[in-house]
Amino acid sequence: MTHSLMARLRRLWLTLHLWLGVGLMVALVPLSVSGALLVWHDALDRELYASRYAVSGPAATQPASAYAAAAQAAFAGRATLTQLRLPQKPGDPVVAVGRMVAPGAANGRPRTLNAWIDPPTGKALATAEVARTATMVTHRLHGQLLIPGVGRKVVGWLGWAMFVSSATGLWLWWPRHANPLKGLRWRRSPSTLFNLHHMVGFWVCLPLAALSITGVYISFPQTSHALLGAPAPAGGGARRSASDDPRFAPPLAAPRLTMDEAVAAALAAAPGARLASLNVPQQGKRPAWRIDVRSPGSEANRTIRVDDADGMVKARDGEGSARGEGGPDPFSRWVRRLHDGTGMGLPWRLVITLAGLAPLILSVSGLVMWLRRRGRRIALRPV
Image 1 (cartoon, rainbow, N blue to C red):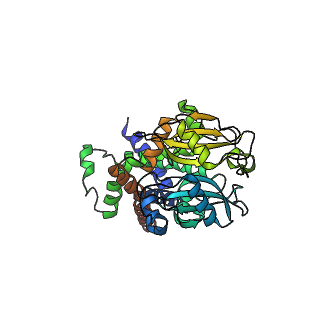
Image 2 (tube, helix red, strand yellow; image 1 turned 90 degrees about the vertical axis):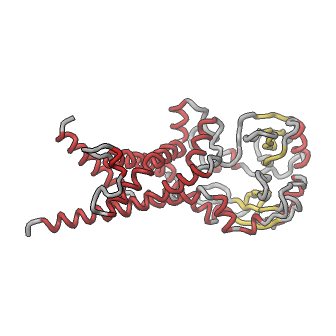
């Protein structure tokens, strides 16, 4: 490759890198910083809303119906119970989710009200509409930039932009006439800002590229699954309005089975397992209780459907439903965990955090460098 071609390519990558970093910093910085915060979602939630986690012990000794009754009392007529989630680890409360009587959200989906319940006593600890709490607003900021409808796709395209910025940044960092190891020196330039930008950019380049690609995969689930031949994600297919989506059908007003009967039928079909969560039957052709159980030593839940009409049981293995698993296929679950750090250990979570904060440093330093260069060019222009 000739010197002139290399120079032209370098100018092209520099221009592309500049406009991606500076031109999109208003969107990329909130996206990346919110991602860094969400790595510590559980810890932040406990710090901000301590009353929800003020449990008296780890053992969930009450029957499911007792937690349901406590939740309905805490809802005080504002919502109807749709789901119970039992503690996944010591210190967690039982979480009850109810469908609110109030008008739905702007996207047409029903609003939900949560109640947090003490596992040993069945006492309600707190209630709140989670969608309006700080942690969930941060989730929506990271997942869709608070843009209704098309926000998820916008985030996906920004993920591509971040990936290209990482690739062009690595090209620009690479020393042109020296051993690459010399690129790791702090004083590559008299400018401290230049050195900071290049050093931070190099060390976060690969993690940031990985987070960008996994974010694209999550933002375009249908396309990603089709390209890799993976099973379609839950709720896949043509986009439907909330009113037509069976996932948002109203709960059955008067189920034939009691909650404890449905749980007993599910546990009888999975000897030795414990209750992880349950969803009450929804209105439709064949209402059924959807109950997740977890066997000893297993990291994934097993979903069991109990027909409300006759109590018949149908097991659905491999349909992991724990929060953050990312879909029915192992690859999608791994992508989700790689992206948000769930279950990946402290070192990788720290890497994600630093990679999420780095675009703020890189955008600001890049903007200042560009303004300084532009100022020097203006100063050198003939009067």
